[in-house]
Length: 188
Image 1 (cartoon, rainbow, N blue to C red):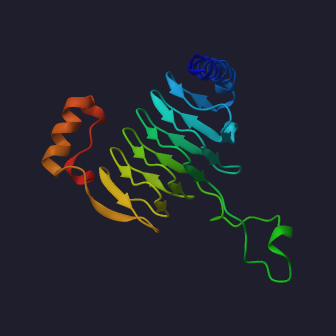
Image 2 (cartoon, helix red, strand yellow):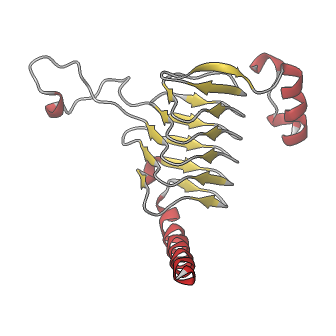
C-alpha cells in the first residue's frame, strides 16, 4: 500500500509541474525558478514575479486594479494572502455590494522586495511594501510598510525587531549585491 501512496504523490507532482509550466505564462512577468501550486488563486495579469521565488500551497494573490510586485529570492509559506484592492464603503444610499466606483485609495500596489520570507497564513494588504530582507511572521496582518530587514508580526503587524544591526546589514549587502544595488546606511 505504501508504494501506491508514493505513486500518487509522484503523479500529483508531475501534474503540478506541467500545469505550472503552462500557467506561468499568464503572469504579467514570471522569472526563472518560480514555484507555485497550479490550484492556487492568482490574478495573473497583474502580478510580476522575479527569479527564485517559492509560493506555498493555498496562496491567494489578487490585485484587479493595481499590481503585485515580487522580487528575487522570496519565500511564501502556505496560505498567504495578498490583496491589492479594497471596496468603496463611502457611498451613502447604496449597498456596498452595489457600489462600482473606486476611490483613489481603494486600489494600491503591493511590493515585496528581494530576500523576504512571508510566513504561513500571513495577510498583506494594499499599499504595503515588504522591504528587502524582511520576515513576516506566520498569521501576521500587514497593513503598512516597515524598513528593510525588519521582522514583523501580529495583528496588525508591528516591528518585532531588526534581523541584523546596521553594520551587519551593510556587510550582508556587500556580500550579496553589486555595489550599485546595495542599501546605504541612510536607507536603514
